[in-house]
Each structure stands twice: as structure tokens, then as C-alpha cells.
Length: 264
Image (tube, rainbow, N blue to C red; front, side):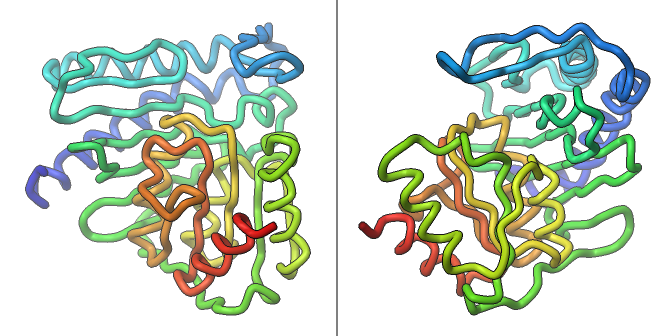
């Protein structure tokens, strides 16, 4: 595990990566773009990608390879490089491409640093809104403001977010999520990665999702946890490689959610 001082330096580098990706992405947002369906999510699952996704990840990769050639890189669009590295950057250049192509600014660039299998740094950058959530050894920040999740021990008062209901498989997975929606105060869809930043700010209490990849979740783990929350898989284990994730701003909600998801 890198020292706190090294982590601070690497978080500064992650800001440079977010600056570079934002410069690439902003000119494409709310413009007419060719959109390709990658068809990598299975039959009937729309998985769009644009030049903005690919160019942003390429820009991030070029900077990493120039500054830290011994580091690994795992990204959604361009695969895994140097897989045996001690430190690996995990990148989703545009998390929420569906939102991006319809002009809704809940997408973001996700940049994580993984050390020994754990996400130790995280950045969620929304360059159109000029908002950047960053988590390192000193906490989670939005700009220069330190963030904290809100106290919400009661499910009946909880605010739940999820990208889309179609991400849950029919049967036990969907049934568990639906049980949870009946217990919370409100459920909102279409929030993509932005919901995790809102959780760190104290506006969202729960994010429950499925069908994820490492680049979808690793950056948001430290963002939520360093603000006081907890992120695990649906069994309560580490979320770094989980396909199903539970994030709770108030840890007292977390166990209640796991029980509801598994009940039935």
C-alpha cells in the first residue's frame, strides 16, 4: 500500500487525468454524434459508445504511460495493460454514455487507483457542470469542500437511486430490489455514477445496482467511504470486482438493505 504522501501525489495526478479527459469530452457533449452499439451486454441490452468515450480514455492512458509506465491500466474501451502491476488505474471515460448521448448531465469520468485489489483513490468528474468529487487519504472533497454523508438510520426515510430497473435480472435479483423500493421514502432512476457523488454530499442515502464492471464502481468506493458511507457487494463483501453493489450513506442502513435483497 502506498504511503499517505504518495497517495496525495497520485491523487494530484488523477486530477490531471480528469482535466485532460474533460478537455476531450466537453466539445462533444450535446452535439450530433455517431453512436455505436457495442452489443457487449447481451441480447436486448443497448451498450452505446462514442468517439468521446474512446478519445477520453486514450488521453488518460497516454498520460499514465508517460508518467508511470510501470502502472497497470484497466479501462472500459481499451482493455487491460500491464495486468501484473502493483498499482492499476481503473478508468471509465464516460460512465453513463446513455445519458451523455441524450444530453443529460448525470454522466461522469471515473478514475480509480487500485492497490493490492482495493480501490484507494477515486475521482468522479462531471466536466460540463464543473463538478469534481475526489477521495484520497484526507477524505472526500467537492472542489475544496470536504463532504460527509447524511445520517439516515431508518429505511422509511431513505432516498434510493439506481441507474435503471432493467439492470436487474428477472427473478430473485429484481424481486429483492423491488422489496427494497417498497420500504424506502423514494426511488429515483437514471442517475448513473452521479448518484454516488450526491450520496457523498448527503442528498442520497442508498444506491443499489447490478450488471456492473470494475470500472463502473472502483472510483466511487473511496468517494462514498471517505465521506462516511459503506460500499459492498450484495453479500457484504468487497465491491471492487462485484457485479452487484450496495452503497449506503449511513452504515446503519447497510445491513437492513442486504437482508431485504436476500429475503424471499
